[in-house]
Image: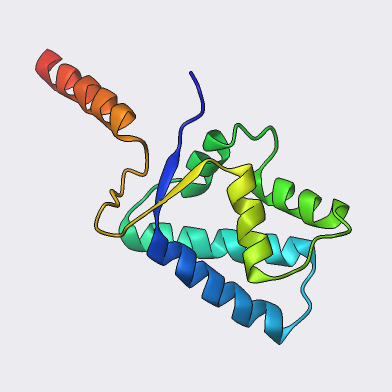
Length: 131
């Protein structure tokens, strides 16, 4: 099976960028702290919209061999040219995970491509028919 794209709303990206800008301006956080902050904000958003295991979905979409947290930290620490700006952090996140930013009106909380949504819905219907 190939990589799955995770759909996230543009409004989430905008909010993450705003939150990161405020966070980064208030202090000079370490790569570990920045990664933790980004992941916590993603998890808070996921809880609010009822999405389970958003970090797992993102890690799967990027076919990551280590956690998203560890990947973010490693990439920020090892790149001498990395600047701790909101845009740089989000660009790094996007390079690690297969993310499609979509209009909020088009966003579905299932987060995965329509084809896979249809396949999963068919499986559920088949399981219900067997009961």
